[in-house]
Each structure stands twice: as C-alpha cells, then as structure tokens.
Image (cartoon, rainbow over all chains, first blue to last red; front, side, top):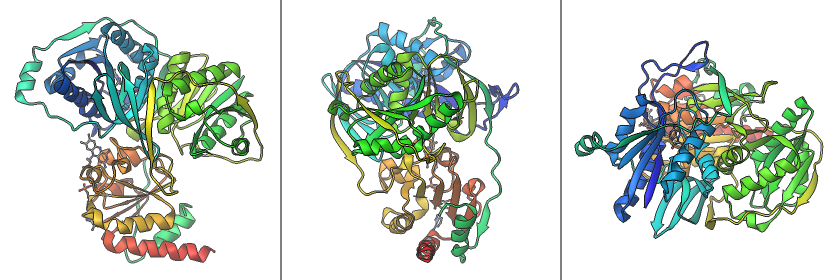
Length: 247
Length: 322
Ligand SMILES: Cc1cc2nc3c(=O)[nH]c(=O)nc-3n(C[C@H](O)[C@H](O)[C@H](O)COP(=O)(O)OP(=O)(O)OC[C@H]3O[C@@H](n4cnc5c(N)ncnc54)[C@H](O)[C@@H]3O)c2cc1C
Ligand SMILES: Nc1ncnc2c1ncn2[C@@H]1O[C@H](COP(=O)(O)O)[C@@H](O)[C@H]1O
C-alpha cells in the first residue's frame, strides 16, 4: 500500500509569537521549527505502523522552501521511505497548498493520504478537506483510530461529545487526531539512514491563493489575576456573579 | 443575494452552534442588505427549524433525507454548494463544530471560494475577518479575495442574539450524493451537559487530583454549575479520564465563558486550548503555578479542601437566588 503523509512545519510550541513589518509578517527570528505534532506523532507514525504490518511505502510531502529540508529529514529519520518537497516560495494560503499537494497526490497513485487534524500555527483544519475535494476522494476528519483489513479501513472519528465508527475503502484522505498512534523518537540508525534517503524537489503548479493575511495582532494583555483566600470561597462566588456575570 | 449558513442537527434537535451562525449570518447580512438563509441537513421538526428566525434567519431550506443521517463531508459539501447556487449566496457561514470543520474546507475547494477558518468576528467592508491563530496566542486578519466566501466560525466566539422573527421553512428535495463512507456506529456521551466544544461552563482538572478516584469533587462542582468536565493531557494519557475530555494544543480547543482549572499547572500547551475562555478561575496549591498569570481569579489552596467548599457555596448561592 502506498501512503502519502502531508507534513508541515510550525514554530516550536514554546515559541514567543511576535510580528514584524507593521504586524504584517510573522517574526521568524530565533524561531525553532518543528514538525507539526499531529502530522508527526499520529499521521506519520500510523502510516509507518500500517506499512510495517502489511508492507508498502510511506512518502512524506511538504509544500515549502529549501529551508524546510532539515526538518523534513526528521520525518525520514522516524521511518518514512522518501520525501517530496514542492518548492513553493512565499506565503500560500490553505487552498494553494492543498492544490499543490493534490497535484502530487494524483500523479502518485497513493492508496491513502494522511494529514494532521490541523497545524498548530494557522489552525486551519482546511487542507485535508480541500485535498479530498480536489482529488475527488472520500474524506474522514479527526480520526482517532485507523485499522486496515485488505483495502477496507475501519476508522473511529471524533464527533461532538462522542465518536463515530465508520468504514471506507482505499483510496481516501484522512486527518489524524490524538489517539491514532504513539509518538516515536528517531533512533541513531534512523538518523543515519535519513541522510541518504531520497528527498525529491518538484516545481510547484503555481496555484494562486484565494485569501491573504493583511495584519496580525497579539491578544490584549491580561489584567492581573484577582486572588481570593481559600477560606473565603463565597467571595469568589460573589465575584463570578456580580463582576464576571458568569453564574 | 443571500448569506447561507449551515444548520446542524443532532438527535432531532438543532445544535446550539447553529443558532450562533444564524445570528452571525443575519448580522452580517443586515450590514450588506442580504438575507440570512439556513440549510438544515437531517431530520428535525418544522417548528424547531422555524425558531431559527428568532436569531434572524429569514428562511430555512430543509434537506430532510435519511441518506444524510450517515455523515459524509463530501455529500454535505455537495448539498451546500448546490443550495448556495440556488439561493445565490455569496457568503457561506459554517460553525467549527467537528462536523463543520470537516465540511467547510470541502465546500471551499468545491466552489473555489476563499475560506477564513477560526473566524471570531464579522467581515468588514473589504471582507477582512479576524481569526484566531497560533493556538490562541495571536489573531490574524484575513482578506478573502474570491466572489464567494466561506467563513468557518469558532463556536461560542460570536454569541447567539435573540430577536423575535420566525423563519419560513421550505422542504428541499436535495438528496445526498452516493456515499463512499459507511457509518457503523455512533457513540454519544450520555447526560444533558453540552459537549466540550460547545460548552459555556467547563470544570477541568489535572495531575494535582492524584488519581481518578478523586474526580468525585470535580464532578460535584460541575454538576452544581451545569458545567462540562475536561482534563489536562497527562490525565487522559494515563486513562484517569476519557480522551475526549483532554483540552489543549493537542486536545480539544475550547472557548467557554467560564473555565475553572483545578490542579493544573498551566503549561503553555494546555493554555493554547483554553486561553480564549472569557473568564478563567485557577485553583492550585502552588502560588507559583504559571496558570495564575492567565487567570482572572485565583485561589491558592488544596483542591481537596477548596473544591468541596466552593461547590457548597455555589449551591447556597443558587438556592438564595430562588
Ligand atoms: C507538543 C506538546 C503538546 C502538549 N499538548 C498538551 C495539551 O493539549 N494539553 C495539556 O494539558 N498538556 C499538553 N502537553 C503537556 C503539558 O506540557 C503539561 O505537561 C501538562 O499540561 C501538565 O498537566 P498538569 O497541569 O495536569 O500536570 P502538572 O504539570 O504535573 O501540574 C499539576 C499541578 O497540580 C498542582 N497540585 C498538586 N496537588 C494539588 C492539590 N492538592 N491541590 C491543588 N493543586 C495541586 C501542582 O501545584 C501543579 O501545578 C503538551 C506537551 C507537549 C510537549
Ligand atoms: N505546507 C504544507 N505542506 C504539506 N502539508 C501541509 C502543509 N501545511 C499543512 N499541511 C497538512 O495539512 C494539515 C492541516 O493543516 P491546516 O489546514 O493548515 O490546519 C497539517 O496537519 C498537515 O498535515
């Protein structure tokens, strides 16, 4: 079975977010880039587990510039067989990224396209559904469990206050949420092997974005926390009622 | 021209999040002289759907075909795209429930309509919309450049405001496209508290609770408030609490009115999923716990003493209100 795992780069979760150029651009300075946790921990690892159990290949794909290569190698170190980087420059929106991925996905004949449920930077949750539509494949979002029997997948997906169990035949697109797999740490052998695994750079289609970010803004600073004595919880109740109007 | 919004139905009832998108569509529509039209997918009574008029909807198109009961994002998106064409909608508003998050991008790609997901405000005159980004650590203002636009709204970010209209309900013969997905089973948590993504009141606890056997006091507090319970990630990881309760960067992102955090240190990854709550109360025995920096009200104390006292105080307060 051929797996395609879409991987994105995001600022490390502890990064202090700031902006430059009059708050129109994200400040890249001193930012440590990591693989988006949902892509790495769940989508990639589950694809690897299924490949290890049933055979096949796992390809990772990223839309971005050459500066991404080092982080893409981490996915190879964890166990992906090869990588494709679609060499797109500049700020692309979800649609443009999805269209680039869809072009690679269509020409590659993959049985399953896996993504993370969202990037922790843009929080779009967009690309999975868009890739599915652009490749005309079924889409299963927010999956927390994925098992294969032959060409049929049994999937659990999160729904409001519960879960849904469904089946779908390959090929399909799936976005991964917590629970689908356990994160893996690359070992020395993997890191060495990653250095020689193929990382193919392909030219983008050049699909135009449909949206653009005009400005960023940090949330207003929080006013100081009001401290209440543990012996006077009644005061908290009054504050929640009179001041915060929550109860 | 119209503003189309998606009405979601669960268990025969209109979801709360759909009242909010009705309000959003109606308010935006009023500012540009367009009507808010809802597309309701699934079985619900006409009376229930007409109630969306209270929130400003003029018309509800009801796609009541049993085929939609088995959820498939592509089939929903096809129906939405088709109805958007019928009513000549240039803006489509979908709540970011888990269903909405699956459907909205498919609609966007199908119509080649630019999308703002994570929207927390109304579009301005240039169709620039404020959205949450960087897990609540910042906002971005996104401009949509296409003739048709999709707005995916964060639940509980806009609010549902009531007026006194009623909506005309019109049956639609629209049928789902043949689905490639077969739903085998739907398991919903029982009880009548709101599911986490829609909850207005949340009581959450972390490793400070020491073990799953101690969650009784958390549930008691949640019960007097009518709140939904949540937890930090390590607590779900060791199965003290079910996975769907895990909030934060890697769990559910929530935006309740009130978030009470008990025995949670307030790590940045936890805050990422809860920092958009309107009011945060922290109960922690460590005065240095980082969570206090993100809180509105704090109590430094032992949860095992403070929480039962707080529960009693709220009970007494509620009784005094009657
Ligand atoms: C990439 C990444 C993603 C992550 N995603 C998430 C996520 O989505 N959600 C999440 O929650 N975490 C997430 N984490 C983990 C996060 O970093 C923290 O480890 C976690 O939130 C800590 O959980 P906790 O506050 O319950 O436990 P602890 O950090 O152990 O804190 C326990 C707190 O309880 C207090 N306490 C102890 N006893 C008592 C008592 N008797 N009364 C009152 N207070 C008491 C202590 O003072 C302490 O502050 C993530 C981590 C990484 C690296
Ligand atoms: N530049 C990118 N290259 C490859 N995959 C991406 C890229 N950006 C996002 N993705 C994938 O799409 C998922 C959802 O992203 P988003 O819609 O931005 O929340 C991510 O978890 C990745 O799997």
